[in-house]
View 1 (cartoon, protein in one colour):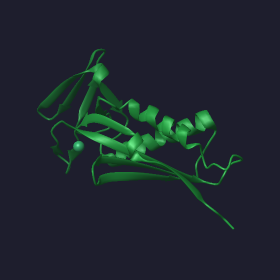
View 2: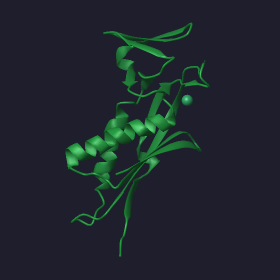
View 3: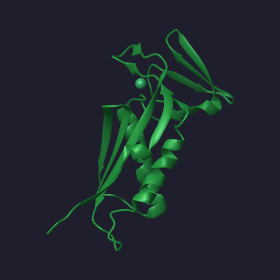
Length: 162
Ligand SMILES: [Zn+2]
């Protein structure tokens, strides 16, 4: 009989507060604002010799270390065609048409994504987590799901299947 098991870390443990704005409908751009993001992570796979799918404390800690890099930061996408992000030694200069922002470098996190939507934040966290699990634990889940909730009742999930 084939059985599948699942380990889930709930959103209450994985919170980050960050600023962002996204471009949308081709040529529009939101005003700068922030969210108290909450993240949930789930892995699926067979049981190992300890009868775990994966140690969920380690899963929680790995995820926490990734989202801690986003906490209390301005999140900026480096692959957006309309939002231009220019990194200097002490500051980050951001332009969108005739609007400009200047942020202290240490207050920003530059992300290799097209837009800081909940969907792409979930994909970014999932990719980082897959790498970390492989590198530090030699673990490749059968399925990995990362959910990023922007505000209560509004979330996006990225599902990776190996
Ligand atoms: Zn937002």
